[in-house]
Amino acid sequence: MTRTLDKSNAHYRKALTRLPLGVASNFRFWGEDRTIYVKRGKGARFWDLDDNGYVDYRLGYGPAILGYADDRVDAAARAGMDVGGVFALSTELEFTVAERIASMVPSVDLVRYSNSGTEAVMAALRLARAHSGKDAFVLVEGAYHGLFDSVLWYADLSEWHPETSDAEPPVVAYSDGVPASTRNLVYLTPMNDANRLEDLFRRRGDKIAAILIEPIMGNCCGITADVDYVRAVRELCDRHDVVMIIDEVKTGFRVARGGVQELMGVEADISTYAKAIANGYPISVVAGREDIMRLFGNGVAHGGTYTAHSVALAAAQKTLEILDETSTLEDIAAYGKRLQAGMSRILDRRGIVHSFAGHPSMGGLFFAEEAPKTYRDWKTSDYTFYDTMARHLHDHGVICEPDSREPWFVCAAHDDSCLEDTLSGFETAIDLTIDELGRDDMRRARA
Ligand SMILES: Cc1ncc(COP(=O)(O)O)c(C=O)c1O
Image 1 (cartoon, rainbow, N blue to C red):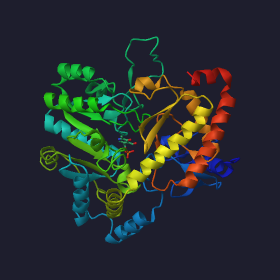
Image 2 (image 1 turned 90 degrees about the vertical axis):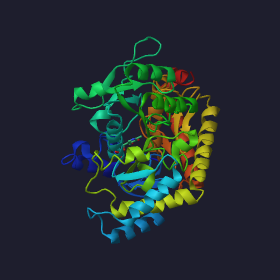
Image 3 (image 1 turned 90 degrees about the horizontal axis):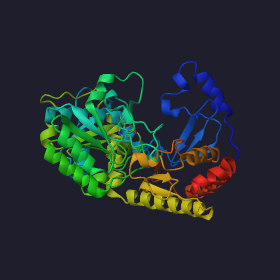
């Protein structure tokens, strides 16, 4: 396949006159001559303005769990349109969907809706602070919890090298414009180090309201917490009166009906959901323990003009029904395993060491012998190889995130023809990457 992006490139130049970077989200800008504008999507594929077709493993960063334009969900959404939108009043369906969520996730007693993952996490943090009477909170290195100031602090590995430095990676703001004062309320900790967390809670537990954790890091190669670690976090939270917020914005209703909590046998105090809940219609959820959730309306503010919109709610009802009552999640995981096995065959034939992190439905591909256990481990992988491969994949009809930290998402519409096209594109992309990087870099890839 030789891809041309003439129409996308022309549109980019036009879009630049009215849209910063020519796009509606910074992450959608892929360079002046590689930014894609979508014409339409169906199932696991989409087509761009130049009619290039792609098998997609970004799926909008996870939401399209049943595939784009799923007929069943879209029919429900159309019926939701007939309800009338938003009334600044409630509808019966809010309760029906809340009942479904509570039946799928044991830690959920009560539910409130918002429109984006960011809003749900903001609400969760506010609740935790109100409940505990404390202001600080803990983030796990490598995690992403949305685009609000409080959580826009991260461990910067760009100048940090595990072989040469014992020092901690610096904590920096993810964006200009984040008030420096918000730094004082954040503690960062590496995944899978319970001793370190215990030490932090001992020293600062009187200030820490919550820990925000994604036990499978959906924005960091699918790096996965050990079950023992997550259980230790649970126990430490109980001991130090810290609210455990499990951010299931990516894992929720994807890795299992009850999300990552079901996989790991752990119950959060508060959970946040978005993405897969409505197959791409904008709705999110903050949910959890009754005593904490009842603080909404009893001191804690929560609301929003578009909250529980009738279209998004109807889409959520149908999507959750399908995910709960059919074998969809098992089918998605089975495809993910076949995909990983196919990739492994291609890489093994060329002697390229690799591993997979996360879950087959959202797996990170990692060019190192072992999957990372912390964000710092990601530094040991050959991400130059990944980045080069990703560009060639795009040219050959397979879409993954250009950044190696984003996992590959699978949906129910990925079928045999998608697998065939993916593996053929993958094989070509790997060979082109080897050609491009040459022998010296390949030696690094082979560790
Ligand atoms: C774990 C996690 N939390 C929160 C968010 C923020 O969600 P949104 O982009 O809907 O605001 C994301 C987005 O990718 C996420 O992956």
